[in-house]
Length: 400
Image (cartoon, rainbow, N blue to C red; front, side, top):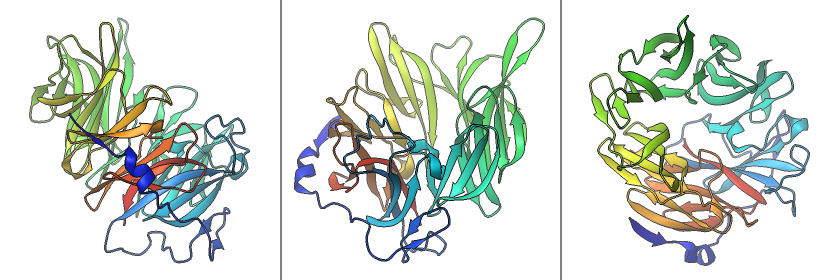
């Protein structure tokens, strides 16, 4: 592994991002939108780097967050370093500061919020629909036909797949694999469901494509499916199989055993997909050693990270592998991994949420937040900008 330093640049290149000022306009829901920002409604001739950040009141310790839900806070959106949107956050606005409860899609912020009895979905701070039940939204797709969500109850098993809040597929038992994905023009997700008989309980696995449910992983030697996706219209999954010591990647056309170091066993895994590649990130264990991450670029090619380091945010765009390895404590140092090279992130800098990386114009952008109370930074292939907010970066997304 090749190591590169960028910590020195943090002091040398700290030009900072612009503060919000100048003309503004309010929209229903209390959001401020830069009047020159087209919110993604008109085409762009180049990719845009969107950064979302939580900005708490000056002097507030957001790491402890003992006034969560009531403290003055805003979700700020930057487009290519320019502030373009500011949305009030808190219980009274039905907007959460949790990094995985909002996402940038098509130049808009789509958020979810749970009351005691309902789930509310908003666009740029304005409610677009709500429905009964408290759910965690684990996936969302927005296209010309509507807003599609995959939600799991906060209090139990099952899930609901919806369009604009209306149920398409629902189960009261089982679990999803935690994603709603676009495979070309198809909207897909996978789930498992226990089937109880008089003798035992057997797990069955399914893929949903555009609302149509099909059973998958029907091989008799499949003992457990760890993750499942649709990739280029093929059903792909990682499974434990009878008579095989290592997990196996199964596609419509072949089976490939994952090369795994001797003495190690996989605890969990997740398939990372992009238009150009399919990779697998696993958390593995061995006797007397802490959990650690392994990244498979192919079943026969893997990278083993240092003991105790686990992937917090992974990006597979551009045909390569980019991820953040968070440190175990606020004084330890994590690092950014990119295609065999590693860059030290500086003591206490971490990736918050699961969407902290984006490839924009061939340049890797990483949003890193300080667990020691400093301002967050945007890392771009070793060059660093500082965001003038008291809080953390919740996502970095490429858009038009």
